[in-house]
Each structure stands twice: as structure tokens, then as C-alpha cells.
Length: 109
Image (cartoon, rainbow, N blue to C red; front, side):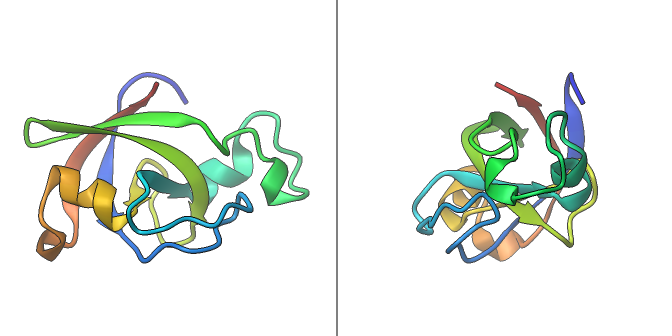
């Protein structure tokens, strides 16, 4: 998957993610969709901590605002090009009360 992607952005309470990293709500992190996580090139469906997508950087854009995040988790409820964010990263784009941002764009950094 390359180029600019379009999807929804949501937020979640962080903790131990699929990449084996414990995050705080103040970290700028994202969970990618399970379909992207599970089929990422170089991942052999073994230990998720070893998935090459872990630690990848993403630049996100919404409503004229941008934020950079790091992949540390897997989102089972996300569509392929949607991202689930830490509260701090989400708040960089919109208020948490928005809940879901339709039409957010992102690309690998």
C-alpha cells in the first residue's frame, strides 16, 4: 500500500498494543487495520511483535491539520485504510467529542 490513503480516524484508550509496546494516551501512536497489519509485507503471521509495520511512521491530515504518529497496535474494528489513534494524536486533528473523522488522509512517512 503506497500513496495517499483515505479513511476514518477514531481514538482509543492505549495500553499494551499488538507490537508489544505499552503506550500512554499522551503518545502519538496509531493502530492500523487488522487487514493491513496481517498482510503487511514481510509479516509471516507469527509473533505480532515482529511485524515490520510496527514502528512505521504515518503522516495524517484532516481539516487543514496534520499529525505524525507511529504504528504500535492492530485495530480489529477498522476498515483497511482507517486508523485508530491515541487520544493525544486524535486531539491534534479534532476534539475527542467528534468521535470519528470521515475523510482523513494519510501516507507512510
